[in-house]
Image 1 (cartoon, rainbow, N blue to C red):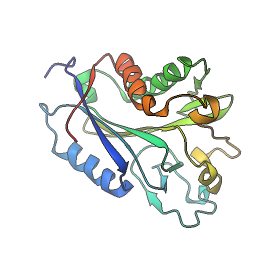
Image 2: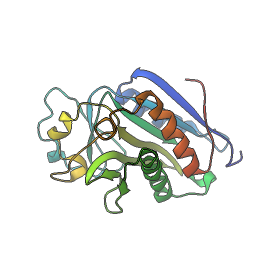
Image 3: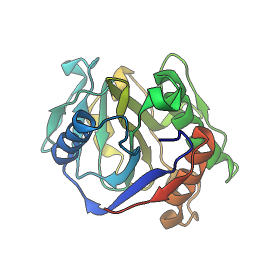
Length: 214
């Protein structure tokens, strides 16, 4: 399979439970072989707090009714909920000839490019993966690699309730502010954002991303 082959994009409407998707990503990665096509899954979750492999459980301050799930992704504590898009990257990194840091940079820079298209200046931080606008985090990155293949990926805050982030220490950074696209560009047609993000990511990965079956 050529590294230039399109990455299949699978999109789901509604909200998919975190455990359902986590189990599906693990199974997909476990079963894939050298001929398995790469995929990107684009979806949203119901409210959930997830703890990455480096997370300190004390970073969950007051979860209230929000479930807390230990994940196998890299990183620390974060929150997922309606209005936040998840971009899960199920890629054969060896076949693509890239490393984990390359994929993290591609995800970060795709968000930076997306925001720059609406004159919002965003940056990445080498010491704390993700994307920041004026010091506030707008996107998080966490990956897992198994036998050279990645899963998990990126979360982008678009138009959501940010209050649950105050129930945790986001990404283990005390006092870290969190922001979202809607607060920065209120008139952006939010339905267009996922597609624009995929276009930016395709450019950064050097591979076309094409919608596939769900």
